[in-house]
Amino acid sequence: ASKKIAIVVGSLRKDSYSGKLAKVMSQLAEGKLDMDIVEIRDLPIYDPDIDTATPPPAYAAFRERIRAADGILFITPEYNRSVPGALKNAIDVGSRPYGKAAWTGKPCAIVSQSPGALGGFGANHHLRQMLPFLNMPAMPAPEAYLGGIADKFDGDRLTDESLRGFLQTFVDTFAGWVERNAG
Ligand code: FNR
Image (tube, rainbow, N blue to C red; front, side, top):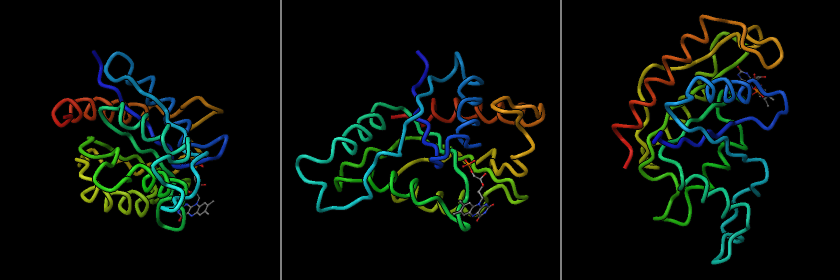
């Protein structure tokens, strides 16, 4: 059976390019990876005082979805040269309780995007900095800093065939990465 991947999208925006990319990449992975887009918008800002023996239902549900995955695909914009707060929050929520992080050992890959030329490089690498601490093997290459993203879609349809080819290579390489590194 195909490995199960949780896609975590770093944007809450309805017409998010990250969200559009998540849908395109899910299609490109059909028959190879089973993609599940996991919502992060309802997670209360991480607060150890509310993360008791009975955590907020949104924390518990999120951790369950992440635990059920064999691998994680992060797709994110860059906010102020780093990851959006909502994504950092989701990572924090999934990292607790201490010693029982939902992320532990899950192979992952990162896609960053921006209408600008740098393609969210800063966000991509700030995210990479967290991964050794979470014990997540991160796919080194291909790197995905998708610049000029606003010119690549017509509505939800990806119109840039060269980008589609790159995303296909990325997904196929990630399928191999998950196969080799999943626990
Ligand atoms: C941005 N944007 C942005 N872009 C960039 O390339 N580098 C940056 O540091 C920032 N900073 C930033 C901060 C804040 C608060 C916002 C709201 C936006 C632009 C942003 O990355 C761009 O609009 C993305 O394409 C949005 O991604 P989604 O929502 O379409 O997935």
